[in-house]
Amino acid sequence: MFHIIRPEGTAHLNRPHVVVHRMKLYEDEITTLNGIRLTTPERTWLDLAETLSVDELVVAGDHCVRIPRPEFEGRDKPLCTVADLQRMIDRHKGKRGLRKAKEAIRLIRVGSDSPSESLLRLAIVRSGLPEPEVNAPVAYSDGGRSLQPDLSYRKYKIGVEYEGASHSDEAQIVRDIARSERYQELGWTEVRISKRHMGNDAKPAVAKVRTALIQAGWRPERRP
Image (cartoon, rainbow, N blue to C red; front, side):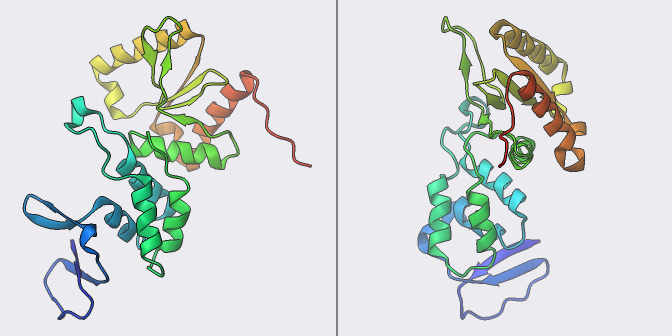
């Protein structure tokens, strides 16, 4: 199914497998890819707010603003910035889905490398646990090798690693073992999360993170 935006007031377009939207579109919200005119990433994100959930919008937003890895992706700049997303919200007042977009942008963070990482972070924060850092490097004191946990608590020396399907690859298993050894060398605790921990609103994953935090000395704030 293709979604096309046509200026307001233009003639109706009826084509199979095509959904036509009539809305205001600024010139700087249009880009060209392989000769095809498309909406920019930030404008596309705002349009998705009409149909996606808040969590899905956060996942999409995290992907838009993440810093790419040039050695794997051939680019070194994000698709857009958080400021770009905010500009779309501010510009299109009254647009459908705007409430969800406003809620989602408060939860978007630079650093998530996968949808699962984003969803895990959201589950952790909504459970009342402290918000972790996202892909923040942890260097050795001598300036040598470093860790870069998917999510981390520097104060409590805890790193949370989400292991997707690629982690069953033999070469990746070797890298994961080496990573676990670096955690031990640094005196950090490694919390490993997989798909099976993400069921039931990620409660099993959150329980593992909570246990590690409590063992490291964290205590929930007491409410009056």
